[in-house]
Image (cartoon, rainbow, N blue to C red):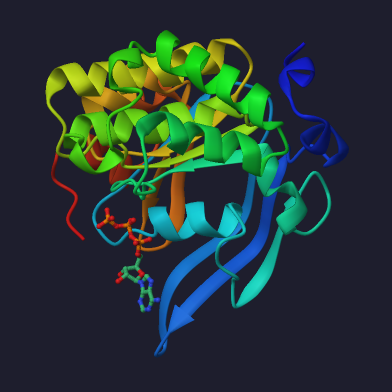
Length: 251
Ligand SMILES: Nc1ncnc2c1ncn2[C@@H]1O[C@H](COP(=O)(O)OP(=O)(O)OP(=O)(O)O)[C@@H](O)[C@H]1O
């Protein structure tokens, strides 16, 4: 069903799921920044990666997204190495959105053109996506004048408009007001219900509880615990997880 929503270019590119990482290791100046033996992102739902500052959350996200190379180990998308030709099948939303200095609608159109939609189709889909997100009134505004919350919502609309298999989000709601946070969470949850896989780095444990189907806890570059959200919060399996939930885990 989702496949029908993709452009011909996207359909020709192999799906990216499952995304796997094996023996991933990143070090700098003798310090191990990341050491993850095995990780698989498959199926449906939303995974939230939590952990103290410097735990390696963003690093892991970037490796899985093919944006950084590990010193050792392999990342595979559906069994094959990450390739530019499949960027059209996933989306990325960062803490500070990088937007084009054009109108709001043009930003969404640009993303749709980039994955192979015609000019007319890109415009039609951009308008529909902005309508669905309640942002139609901003369609012709310059992206430069948007508030922080509006910028993040636009970045998410832009990513979701292309119907990615997998969406990576790196702290997309830090520094937003509660209404903007809710708007972003709702958009991610709606897309997830429609079959999109999401992996999000978050600091706010209340947010993790609201949006995550499962939690990955990282500490010192390692995955300490991975569990369904209820289990993670109600029955943490390690002292590290207990300390983290209680706000006692330091870097
Ligand atoms: N290019 C790099 N060179 C040296 N150190 C790096 C590099 N990239 C990341 N690091 C270090 O790797 C560690 C993990 O970084 P990462 O950004 O993944 O942490 P994080 O868990 O996302 O932290 P935060 O919650 O503070 O955003 C940090 O100590 C960081 O300083």
